[in-house]
Length: 208
Image (cartoon, rainbow, N blue to C red; front, side, top):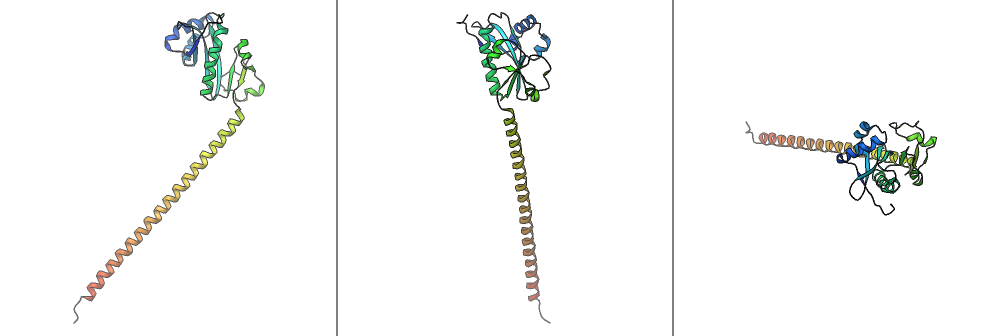
């Protein structure tokens, strides 16, 4: 068994019949999971046969590993590392800060998951039932530090927006002043021309 190799990839519609069989064997709600197909990763053997799957639901920078299923759990320990590598890559690519699971295989404990403490649930997405027993969690990034950075970035963006608005306002004011000056010059020039014309006519009048 140790020489067996597996590959992990995102589930596709072509995998659905096999997945539905797996889910049914685990007494999972098949119709519900079918709607969540895009969350699932599958492990395949060298022939392309799906031998196991696991879901990763991502909400607000948190990920929930769920609905792990295998046709033969004798292969699970050999396939899980490949699935875990896939999940870890997805978590990194999507900038997740924490993973959650209620899967109880020792594999998850060996890969850093620990029982969730009361404080851990503070930022847990409401989509998941925090009152379910057996939650394990794995901290990937410092949530507080990221939250602080997000606030600082938001403040920076707002400041830049205000600065841009101020610059635009000043530019509009200068444009208005410039147009006003051009208008005054044009009026003055026009008045001067009219005055010259009147003066020329006045000079050219015959005397009596």
